[in-house]
Amino acid sequence: MSPLRRLAASCLLGSTCLGSACGGGGSSSPTTPTTPVAGALTMTVDASGVLLPKELVVPPGSRVLFVNQSSRARQVSSDPHPDHTDCPAINQVGFLAPNAVRETGNLNITRTCGIHDHDDPTNANMRARIVVR
Ligand SMILES: [Cu+2]
Image (tube, rainbow, N blue to C red; front, side, top):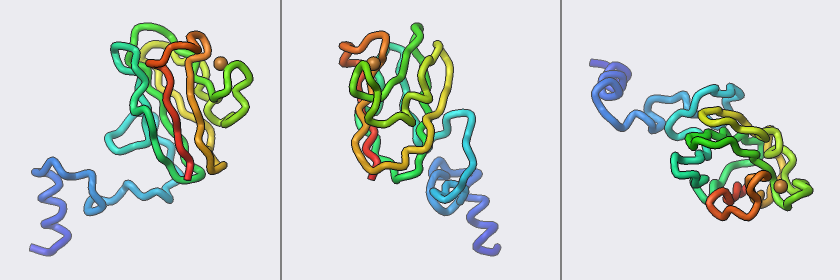
């Protein structure tokens, strides 16, 4: 069996198909996924209303998917509240209905981007940050 075929076979059988062996996860890919994929740059509001992870480190030029698994709508915004000027690309997510998935713009500037729910700005559960570096 060729090495290539063995790779393919192990990917079908194994649970470790997220590594470089199976490709497709290249950071240079310009494709924009429409559904969250394991290993993708994703932040999720879980069912209990907690935005996770609390810190996500991404390279410049990245986009991050926001997924709302909670039962109420969110207004995903860059810090500082209420001006939202630190990382305007995050404001592109904006209104996020329950079960909605939306994407930031390109996070081109290396800096730390605080995130909050503009409709609930003091809710610590909805605070997190993206570190662009
Ligand atoms: Cu705000």
